Length: 76
Image (tube, rainbow, N blue to C red; front, side, top):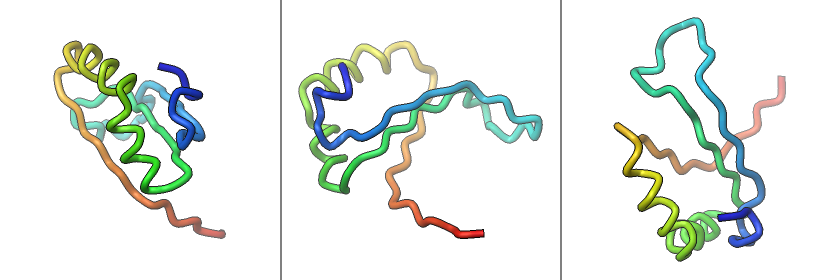
């Protein structure tokens, strides 16, 4: 699946835990997706390409945690 397949998807990033605090609770990788709107999340979750990819990808994961949130910008 490519970002252009879901138009509400603005940005997708992933990475491996590099924290020295050891508070990852067994999670080793992060996959982060940014959407135009909350409705865009619903479009993404139900999109056939995402469903197909998820069904294959999740078979290879021991555990998953998902957060859907509206970010708040903090100006320091």
